[in-house]
Length: 402
Image (cartoon, rainbow, N blue to C red):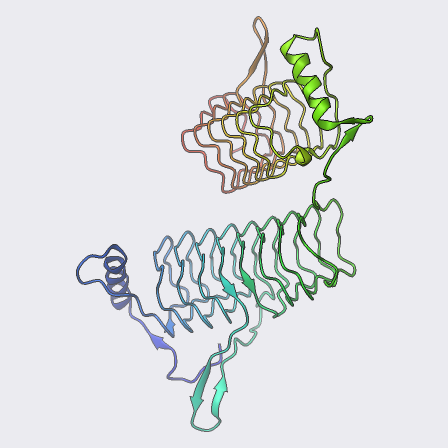
């Protein structure tokens, strides 16, 4: 960061410790508390993993190379701060002022930037020779030109019109303000951009495979050479299966299950968009064949899916709380951020002494909530459980790679 020699101030470890202790008292309302003022402090390469600096003042602070993983900077002011090469994984930046920050080379994987302000901002300081001059974060040899923001929550965030060739794979950009943003060649594979504002955004050359574009008007955005394969747009109002509405097909399947095959008919579907049904709470879908189908964001609490084939299905953000998923096939399925609290993923008894195990081989469960789930003997080979919540989950005998 180019700065006048007297702008950045050194901070000894003892002084930093006192500042953090006083800030902790400030946050808890205890006597002797004082809001942390670390404006223009040189905190480069500091190790503060898990630190709570919510509501702190960090304008123009130098935090390049800092280890801040798991920290809380919610509502903090980091206007013009230098965060180059910082480890910001899972950091909470919700509603933080990040205008003008430099994030080149920073790792914000699975960070929370919900409602954060990432627009362009500039710090001007008085210079005896040049009057007021603008401070800039000059590129240095070896600098990455982008930040890693895979899985980051940017819901409702305001992004700068500054060019950011970022890795936003599987990021949450729902309702984000991207008007005028230059995301040339950005990685947006699997990103949830529901309801995002992309007026005059430059997404040329961006990879947007499997991105969610429901409620997004892309008519003014530059999508030249962008990869839009398998993007998820608004669901159709009604889906027909062989001239029968999907709702009727599912009702027939439920009758088939209820009568043990005496009535109705089993549903054999492939790559069907179930979102037109709006919700599937407590529906009986036992043994349904629906590989590659879309259940994105649906309310499926308590649904019965024992022995079903959902290989390659899109269940991102779905509510599967308390669902019966015994013996289900979810090979290659996407369950990013799915709510599986209390779900039953254990083996399904199919005959005396014979059980069908749930198979989640190569399934993606990034940031999925599996707390208190029953998943005995489940197959999780090559499954991605990055950021998944597993507290209280019963994984006895599960096939996992360590």
